[in-house]
Length: 93
Image (cartoon, rainbow, N blue to C red; front, side):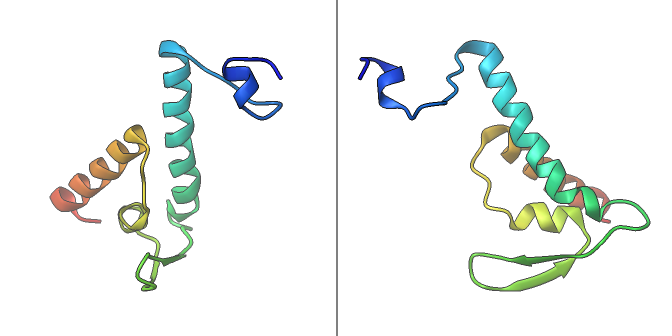
């Protein structure tokens, strides 16, 4: 096996460094949140069944509630979660 980072990771891995790599990861994380909430938007928005970490079942089409119940670790996605909570606090639904 080769030494260095390439030798430690599985075959077919992607390694990104610097500003471009960080930007791509941030966009991908935010895109995943938009994929989760996309079908709840608009006049034909569908309800989502959310089960939180305590086992509580929530049925809602409110995107702020959906995002609030997610366990988000990525910093850029966490910023979207905080923005959704702030907007929900200020304006409501």
